[in-house]
Amino acid sequence: MPGSYLVVELTNRCSLKCVHCSVAEAGHAHHASTGYLDPALFDGLIDDLVASGGGFDALILFWLGEPLLHPHFTALWRRALRAAVQHQTFGKVEVHSNGTHLGEARAQALLNAAAVPQVLHLSLDAATQPTYLAVKGIDRFALVERNVEELVRRKQATGARWPRLVFQFIVGANNHTEVGAFRARWEGLCRDLGMPVRVAAGHVPPGEDAVVFFRQLDCPTAEEQEASNALFRAEMAAQGLDLPARAAEGERVAAENRCACSGFWKSPVVSWLGELTSCTRDNLLENRIGSLRDQPFSALWWGADQAGRRQRVAGGDYAGLALCQRCFIPRSLNHSDLDEASIARQAAHDAPLLEMK
Image 1 (spheres, rainbow, N blue to C red):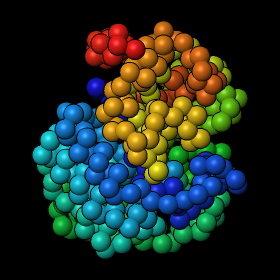
Image 2 (cartoon, rainbow, N blue to C red; image 1 turned 90 degrees about the vertical axis):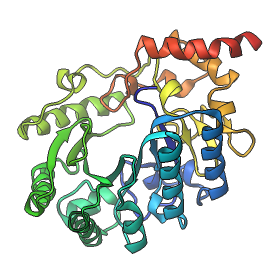
Image 3 (cartoon, rainbow, N blue to C red; image 1 turned 30 degrees about the horizontal axis):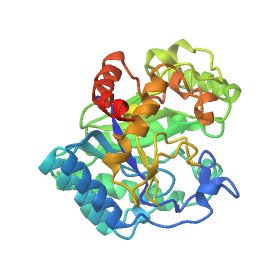
């Protein structure tokens, strides 16, 4: 399905405590226990997708922890690449990292010329040490700056095609004054090295060139989201950057959901324990679909129960889905669009399942 992506959480452990992440929330249930995704679960997921003929536009190896902490990261990364190359299971493979663990083994795995697009989102969010500490909760600014710069220089020196580098800055009230300095730092380094680079806001544009990327902050309440959206629009205007229409128009944010959310069609999320849900905001697994420890992914995501949810949500019915009822993200910039043609195609696939229920 166009725009689909499978999110797999390699770990919920993290080397930082970013204030906009659940890792920083004391007592958050998602982090009550921590650990790493069992490689056997990951292999089972890949094998199931290959056997069932399932696939996604993107595989994203990240959710609520630092994926490069996983002791078997390089093996998992290469396993994903093989599935993409040999079976077209994924159109591209992405990982999001805060850059604290970009060591030699990780760099060797990431820098390659495999026949599948790969993206490394570097979640940086600051241009100076004080702001970094305020946003990230732990001061590893100098280490991250060094790690990221070394990777950029190594990629250019080796001529490695992948990964595409995305220098990400989530714009908030605690760091917006450093938007210009952040842009100058990473755009300047790329240009000095002769590496193609561009600057974008709202969505990462297609291509292979490096991107200095400014992202809108997702907030917990509609009021906070409106204020954050206004700040984002102002800062991007100051940089002369175009925004997608939804952000540029400044639509009012309502704490209710009356449209079909694409999550039920496009964005399954697998936690490090193998629990499956349909939204990255569902960090308490309120809309849990099932566990990969009990059933294959294909039986859960393309099974009768999820087909029933899709049928109800397509009509705007979120009964029994309290998290969705109060969600405003389907109207935000950080949401994947869903068209009627995609709903209809999936409905045709789901119809026999619903008849058997």
